[in-house]
Image (cartoon, rainbow, N blue to C red; front, side):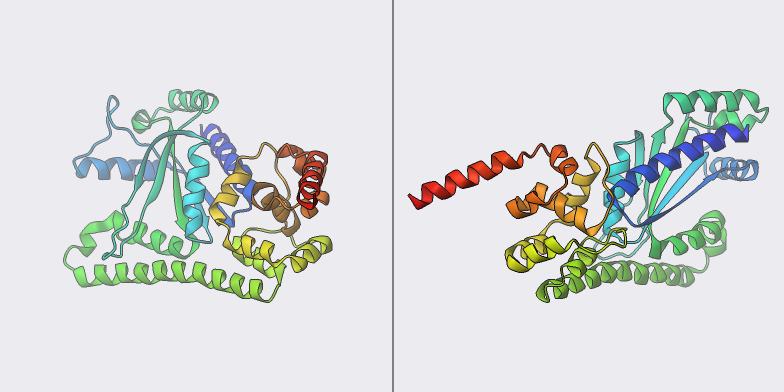
Length: 315
């Protein structure tokens, strides 16, 4: 029985890993399958809360749970947007942001198993003699967190959410626990701003590798920026300025939508940015054909058009 669920869990995690590695997001992934004890505990808790699971009604939706923990706060939205298109979306729990209140923000997504996995899950249900398995839906849950908030969520889930009665007469302690989260959320914001400030300093110093690495905050291969690109950027400071002002999320979403995957390194990222935004002919000339083909860019046509434009101006 468990082997079937383990296969589903493994293939879901593999798909997530493929999609996030393609864009170079810095993250960690954790997954689990609820055991009998956890299933029984949650079933009982929902019954006591007056929201029991029913065979013909609301059922448990997280027999398989996957948590993606990002290094940076703004990557939560990126991961959400990418994964929502890769699975059969059912519903979500995303807490609203409140300006005057610090509280944990859930970003949880419920997805339907695909046809293959649904068949496996059905076989698992039929093979199980436990009544509780009849109360489980063919869905799984994705939880998105930042790496700074992850530890707090684990403590909160185990020692507050599952035992709310311990906190009922101790509101000051509960407020203090929320205060710890407030500090972590603030640190998430500060962390992102720190790297943006560092990127700006590298831009001013014409340290193009430092600019790109700290601007985009991806899991770059440890390869230097190609010397030809450094020379082009040194000779045209406007290109460096454009890179610094780029919308990071737009570049990552664009990489995600490409038909093929490229190694995430500094040089390839500049090639991709040039095809998307910069349109610099000198960079085009040293860009691998595979990347140019992906963007349907023909250097010969571009060169002819530039030459015609130059001649027209001269005349």
